[in-house]
Length: 361
Image 1 (cartoon, one colour):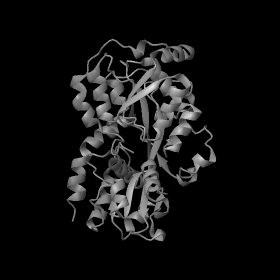
Image 2 (cartoon, helix red, strand yellow):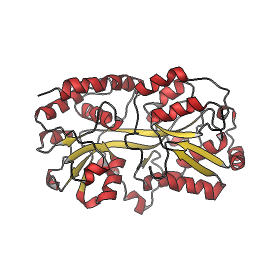
Image 3 (cartoon, rainbow, N blue to C red):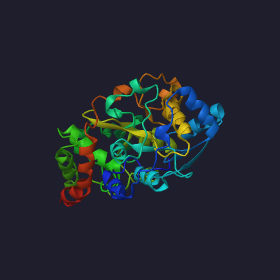
Image 4 (tube, helix red, strand yellow):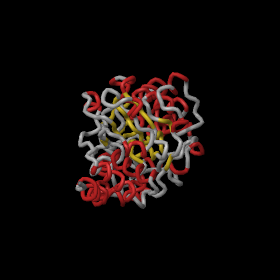
């Protein structure tokens, strides 16, 4: 996967871009939602341009290939973070180079709506999307999810000692890596998950900070970044990361070497949403792509790339289902109820982490 660390840039980066927002006449917003019209016009456009949706991330390549074979729509992508995607929506304006669709974190999607960057399109799968993962007016809905898990390298830690809960992680003898809390959303969600498991929420991260402060005082907090390269080199004992990253990394290195566990006392589940630029150069192709992503075939394509589909009523082939962790492993799952509040907290989290956790001794 190319977009390491993309999984949700905080509102800070988005807010900085706000002054650049211009309100051009909507192109995608003025397009029809009639399915026959969408298909007909998308074929005429013949192209869809994405940002942050490269072939190697979540198996997007299979969806792009399907669009080409079924609808004669070609595809190009420029890989970038959520913040960069929205910046591109703004800077390109209503021009022929304006991207059509992007893949951004749910926690920044409300900001994109507030800044009038998106067009609404619910697709026929709207009712299948859980309420926590969509905007009531249809500006966004998640295509797939990620949940925080533990990854244990059994070359460094006995498989029998692999943590299965935050409680066990706290009492272990191994070092724990979560990445850079000041810049990486995966690390920020790890703090939130620890907070939730210890009685907190997106409005109260103190239990999560206290949790990692104790680990730091035990000299067990690793400074090694949670990259596939570091996992491969054996520089990580236990890492905290998104399940789809963990599964993908383990598969690329050696699945038998790593033990992946979902904390039984609580994990966070959030998602990515495929949003349509209000000034999309190919608005119908964008709508067709979003609908296809949420179709049974599109959801299966994502699952092949280790991303858990947002639609739970899609029957995955056994060979694909086996790529994911069993649903029964996710015993206690928390969804962020207030993304605006969560964004506000992440703006302060980097400094709080530096002061309270890294400064602990």
